Figure 1 (cartoon, rainbow, N blue to C red):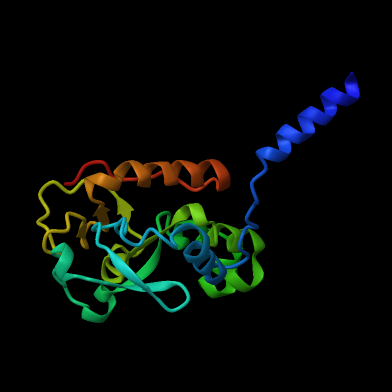
Figure 2 (cartoon, rainbow, N blue to C red):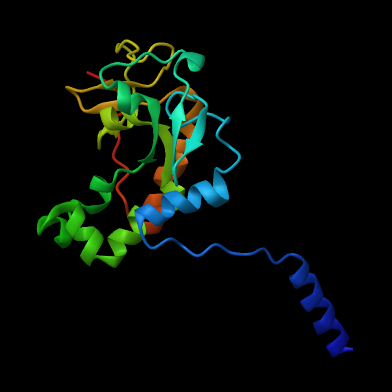
Length: 198
């Protein structure tokens, strides 16, 4: 009876076995893996900050149809048209207090610190975004900017460069919060944000 029960459990477990994806060992590999296994058919779901559709180009990037989503370029036409992979919790936040960062910055951490490489390549923390908005956000905190005007046409993500705060569009605030909680639980990333503006 025990053999039959064990065999039955093994068969059931086999039915629910899903292939696992090995964690990428670098940010570059993570971007390729995200395109191949996660976002391969989701480019019309909209990118993170403005909800714009894009088409895939190259190994891991894409081109945004700016006119179709009402996006207006703020300053950088070339970067605005391309998809980049945004670290929702910025790589700077993950690394700037590590010894490797103190001794050579991000590039040094990428080449010498396995923990940093793991955090930088964590696919849960990476989202496709319009390059210009990704660049404007930089490593700024997220927070509320009720008195800041829209900067990118109909896109409601806003950045206050003086306060170093970015407010993502309402539709992704929950996603951003969940990513921060995940990165905090997994790696101890700080949860510091600005909930009000001055």
